[in-house]
Length: 203
Image (cartoon, rainbow, N blue to C red; front, side, top):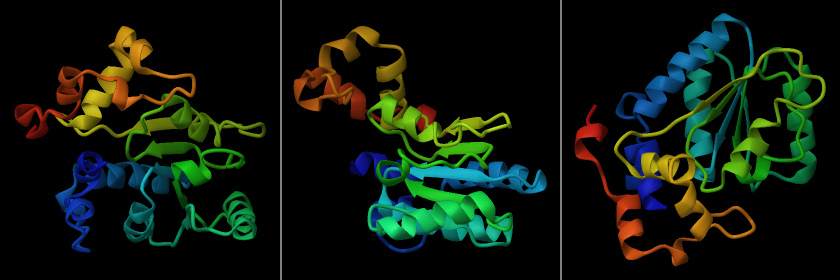
């Protein structure tokens, strides 16, 4: 899990509270997307698997849009969740919604969003797809652009390769739930998963 945290931002790994946008390629790319969304007067969904990342993301996006957005995670009460969804759907002044993927990835109708960002990769692609489907529910009349952030040369690229390119390996270690079962992987496969490609990571 720590290998995945450092891909998001050094401050998530160090727990130093810094979260300077220029220190993370993901934040830099997110700014570019958010600026496009703002210029088109559209709405943005951002999913992350880490609850502690939701607040820094919301603060950063608020500075880009010049307006506050919404945040939903596992600690959000059920009644509050319904109100947040209603506001996002109905209030045109709310430009973005940051959600933890496990809390906000199912059961919500967020069709006013036309852009979806997966800020970090989940082990199970079905969970990502289910989260993306929040914007594809009945009532969506716009094209939806989906962005999946992958930090090159790191575990995230390995996860992506494992899921997309090594289908036989996935079939060998995936259980019925669709989750990758790390305990069933060989030592060699585990080392390959977490190995850092310094040259790619530096690009």
